[in-house]
Image (cartoon, rainbow, N blue to C red; front, side, top):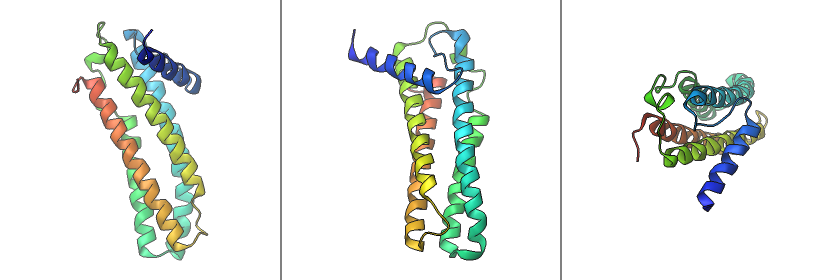
Length: 170
């Protein structure tokens, strides 16, 4: 066996353990439900992060500088944009979900992106838990900038995953 196969298998197995309903993409009849389970799981995690930040954001209205308010506002908009993408993916009813002969290369890439997205969302959750309305201004700005960068990375991975599903990459 090649090491690539082992990586793919371990990523797939880790995703199956982490996400209820995640079966894999090899069988056409499982692709739609696997994708939906994956997106639903990510959405639930992002919703928890958003709820946490919304509670902090409400306290900023009276206490924070305009820069800090703007930063949290941009973070919240970025989170909502990703949530919208997950709720309404651009690739619904795409041929990927019914075609029988898809390349192993694309399966490996999907597992890589799914694993990457799962890890990125876990890191975002950990980092967002560090954020506090009581921290000093500089620390809060640093954390908010870091959250924004993490969200940007999630958006990039999600976009690249969508390209694989739509068959727009080699």
